[in-house]
Length: 153
Image (cartoon, rainbow, N blue to C red):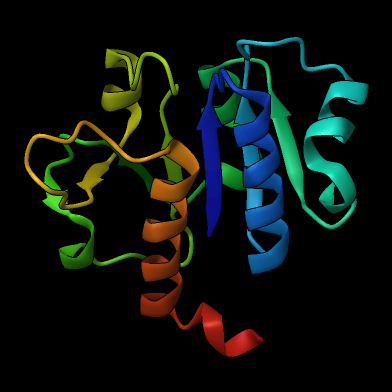
């Protein structure tokens, strides 16, 4: 199981993703370009004291991410407000990568086209969306439950 951020805009969300992935033992993929300079110093600052505990891989583009060896064999599952099905009804697999779009612009067409599935989190009518990392955490915990990943702790 992996979590991927597509062109993140907000350094604090990247930091929260580092912490989430470190604590849950899930690999993190960062698909660039980011909406902020992603230098090694900026990455360390965003990750705080979780940087050395998270397995994170930077990818120069969506194509580079899709071609990465660690992506072979698993599905790309897009988490989006208009996802095709409720995340609780989706059957996750251990090789899945859950991907989140940009905070400011959501998911572009190329991300929808690249994904083998899309899921949504049911929300109260009239509200637009959750914080991107909160959404990732909600879906990730369900995916881990379904695949038995919690049993490793």
